[in-house]
Amino acid sequence: MPDPHWNDALRTGHLGLDLKHKRLAQCLENVLAAQRDGKSGAIVDQLLLGLWKATEVHFAEEEELMRRVAYPHIERHVSAHRRIIQILSHKMEAYQDISCDVGSAARAFHAWFTNHTVEDDAELGAYISGEHASPQTEQVSGA
Ligand SMILES: [Fe+2]
Image (cartoon, rainbow, N blue to C red):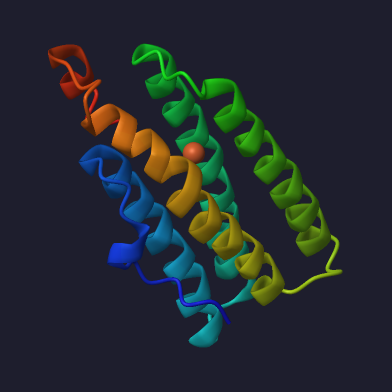
């Protein structure tokens, strides 16, 4: 089972992104805790669906942030989001068809979260917080 806990290796260098990522990590932790604690299938389903929706919303918010700061690698980053959404869509369909269990679905979320966060999102965080930071980008730090 993946370790869903937040750790410093997942920091992007941008406080707003890190706060959003911590919330997603908490959603994943809630899914795994519900399963571990023997909560009903309906509750686990609801929490996993919540994580899925939160991921979609987070990607949309992050893409809006990239547009606002004129992030030069936006196309590559958005493509990465699309690939992740495709993988997670397949996994969620498999979960709903009962052809994969919650642990398998959770591992898919954990994989994107750890890989994408430390690579693509860290690059975005460094861009926003670095030399390209301006009063305008500071206003979106909560995004
Ligand atoms: Fe991202």
